[in-house]
Image (cartoon, rainbow, N blue to C red; front, side, top):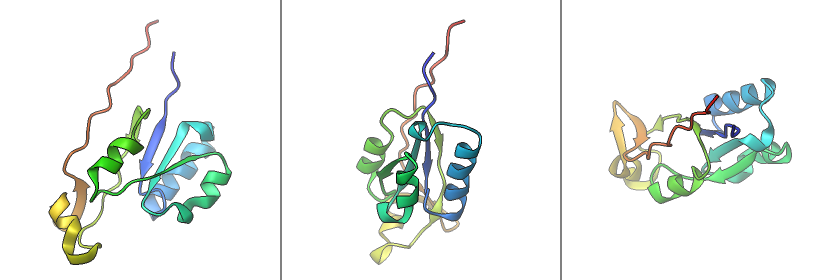
Length: 115
């Protein structure tokens, strides 16, 4: 059986930070947690604990593909649109009512253990 690798987008934000802390508190090994952020420095404390910190941005879908390599469990936290210059988030993300999600999220294949 393979271990679950959990990824949390927006790990430097309020909800994402709490989700990573909860995974750690539940005993998930830090090496099985991927914290996805736009700015690595904001979660240096997580990297020091052994959490795999990866940089990605909803406005750059290629970065998400790279950041999700090896992940089989994902918490995708939305963000507010219009935070980037000239509304780039609105152009590149699927915005609805001011919230932003990547237009394209590739489904992570589900792995089932055989008992």
